[in-house]
Length: 136
Image (cartoon, rainbow, N blue to C red; front, top):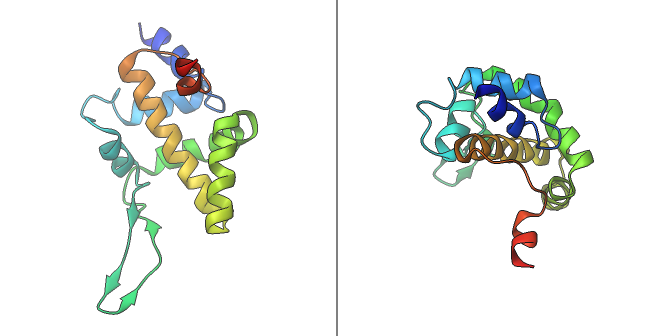
């Protein structure tokens, strides 16, 4: 049962066996995770904005979460950008908007984490351009 679920998660371009195992182990199989927002916060990939009066700081990730999950998703995010058309378009759009590679790559990490959670909970495999395929 566990191997079948891990195999389904590894159908995501860029996510290999080690990445899937680290994310699943660090979250205890998503036992206490009830939403993607909570998972992103647990991993420390949520955005924090510091402001005071008229002063506005730069938005940054909090890094208050699980460092192992963030480490495990770093290289898979770049692999996903290289081999997944959807991730590449998402990355390019954010890179043009923000002008920084790391910001766009972190957003891809958040997307991958949410995708891993969704595939695990729904017990399904990854299908590139799912919405487009469903419409036709």
